Length: 113
Image (cartoon, rainbow, N blue to C red; front, side, top):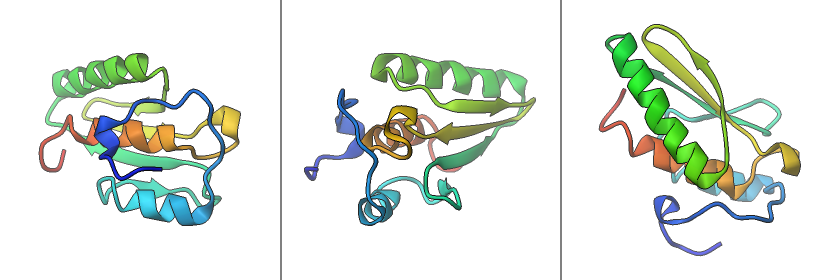
């Protein structure tokens, strides 16, 4: 892995599950509100918005990123919130792609959502 910003990277076609040390390093490169699941195989973050319109606008922007990166999260969407879950199923856990997409999603929301 090189030192380029995660937002400057693109999805890797060949993925493998990251070891715990790399995961811990990459966790410091994304917003502090992302959390690691107990089993270390998924990251998630909850975003809050003022209303349904803002929530759906965020989901649509996230969908554009997911489509262009060809890496799709699981989402929980409500009136004023969206919980984003990333894991790379083909790798059996977390890959660099999860962190690339998380960083790009962080860039959608100035400050805290």
